[in-house]
Amino acid sequence: MRDGWRLNAPAAARRVVLVDAAGDAHEVRVSGVARDAVVHLPARDDDRWESPGAPPHPVRASLVRDPGADGAWWLTVDGVRERVRLVLDAPSAAGEPATVWLWRDGRTVALAAPDREQRAARARDERRRARGDAPGATDPEVRAAMPGTVVTAVADGDPVAAGAVLVTVEAMKMEHPLLAPHDGVADVRVRPGDLVRRDQVVAVVHPHDSGAADPAAPVPQPDIQGAS
Image (cartoon, rainbow, N blue to C red):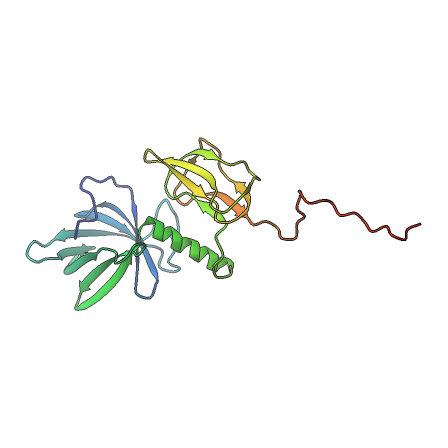
């Protein structure tokens, strides 16, 4: 398994999400490098971050490869050292996450390691469930997949079709189009030149009101038959 931390990496915390066999996601944020890291755990009471700027419950951790055995690592957490085995399996099919196998204390645990797109899809599903949307409903919120600069954006209030480009964000010297999830009216939250954060809502597509009159349709005239 390749070391997941880069040597001489900056101290900025990186988000790590693993999903267990029950489908529950476990998120931590890691600062530093493998040999000397700080792992920020979510608040214990509700499993949520109390403050985005200062995640609670930081612990010191170290992960060092054991050259004596394949897949063996020395894991130290808050001064307690133990030997574990870690193996990373590549995705078995397109769209599937990689799997991390962990052997520890005689137990084996398989954890899915979703990539950024898979995490975003999972977050969209969770938001739909929280809103009580019907199964198969699309998320009206369009979010930035990564930090960047807005290059183009449609006009606020424009009617859009599913798959139309709403906003284009430049990041990592590439342009990333953000598409309308369904037909509707665009509620655009950004303008060209704006800086956006990862997962920031850049637009919301409100479905057409099925009861609203079509502005292109003729205006119905009142029935005046029999009027004097």
